[in-house]
Image (tube, rainbow, N blue to C red; front, side):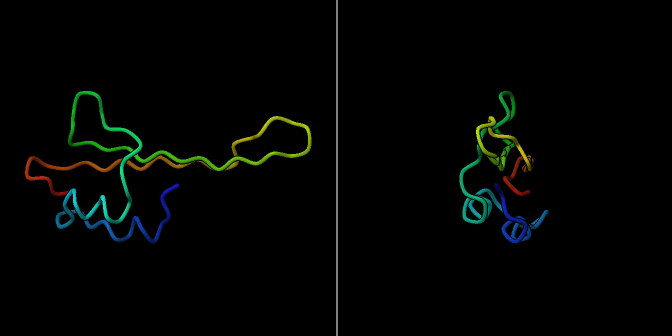
Length: 71
Protein backbone atom coordinates (compact mmCIF):
# COMPACT_ATOMS: atom_id res chain seq x y z
CA UNK A 1 0.00 0.00 0.00
CA UNK A 2 1.35 3.44 -0.92
CA UNK A 3 2.12 5.44 2.22
CA UNK A 4 0.98 9.07 2.35
CA UNK A 5 4.49 10.41 2.98
CA UNK A 6 5.74 8.69 -0.19
CA UNK A 7 2.81 10.04 -2.19
CA UNK A 8 3.65 13.56 -0.93
CA UNK A 9 7.05 13.23 -2.70
CA UNK A 10 5.25 13.18 -6.08
CA UNK A 11 4.66 16.75 -7.26
CA UNK A 12 2.31 17.45 -10.19
CA UNK A 13 4.02 19.49 -12.90
CA UNK A 14 7.50 18.63 -11.61
CA UNK A 15 7.91 14.88 -10.95
CA UNK A 16 9.01 12.60 -13.79
CA UNK A 17 8.59 8.86 -14.30
CA UNK A 18 12.00 8.32 -12.68
CA UNK A 19 10.98 10.38 -9.63
CA UNK A 20 7.75 8.39 -9.28
CA UNK A 21 9.62 5.08 -9.54
CA UNK A 22 12.04 6.20 -6.80
CA UNK A 23 9.22 7.40 -4.53
CA UNK A 24 6.49 4.81 -5.08
CA UNK A 25 8.28 1.90 -6.75
CA UNK A 26 7.01 -0.02 -9.75
CA UNK A 27 3.30 0.36 -10.47
CA UNK A 28 0.95 -2.52 -9.78
CA UNK A 29 -0.30 -2.17 -13.36
CA UNK A 30 -0.42 0.27 -16.25
CA UNK A 31 -3.54 1.28 -18.17
CA UNK A 32 -4.03 -1.21 -21.02
CA UNK A 33 -4.42 1.44 -23.72
CA UNK A 34 -2.36 4.29 -22.27
CA UNK A 35 1.22 3.79 -21.06
CA UNK A 36 1.03 7.24 -19.44
CA UNK A 37 -1.33 6.06 -16.67
CA UNK A 38 0.03 4.00 -13.78
CA UNK A 39 -1.99 2.35 -11.00
CA UNK A 40 -0.78 1.53 -7.50
CA UNK A 41 -3.25 -0.82 -5.78
CA UNK A 42 -3.02 -1.97 -2.18
CA UNK A 43 -5.14 -3.78 0.39
CA UNK A 44 -4.80 -4.47 4.08
CA UNK A 45 -6.45 -7.67 5.26
CA UNK A 46 -7.14 -9.06 8.71
CA UNK A 47 -7.88 -12.61 9.72
CA UNK A 48 -9.96 -13.15 12.83
CA UNK A 49 -10.00 -16.61 14.22
CA UNK A 50 -11.25 -19.27 11.83
CA UNK A 51 -13.05 -16.82 9.54
CA UNK A 52 -11.83 -15.95 6.06
CA UNK A 53 -9.56 -12.89 5.83
CA UNK A 54 -11.44 -9.61 5.50
CA UNK A 55 -10.34 -6.49 3.62
CA UNK A 56 -10.14 -3.68 6.19
CA UNK A 57 -8.46 -1.01 4.05
CA UNK A 58 -8.06 -0.46 0.34
CA UNK A 59 -6.23 2.22 -1.64
CA UNK A 60 -5.90 2.89 -5.37
CA UNK A 61 -3.53 5.63 -6.53
CA UNK A 62 -3.61 6.73 -10.17
CA UNK A 63 -0.58 8.58 -11.55
CA UNK A 64 -1.00 10.14 -14.99
CA UNK A 65 1.86 11.55 -17.07
CA UNK A 66 1.72 14.03 -19.95
CA UNK A 67 3.49 13.36 -23.27
CA UNK A 68 6.77 14.70 -21.83
CA UNK A 69 6.63 12.21 -18.95
CA UNK A 70 5.72 14.74 -16.24
CA UNK A 71 3.02 14.02 -13.64
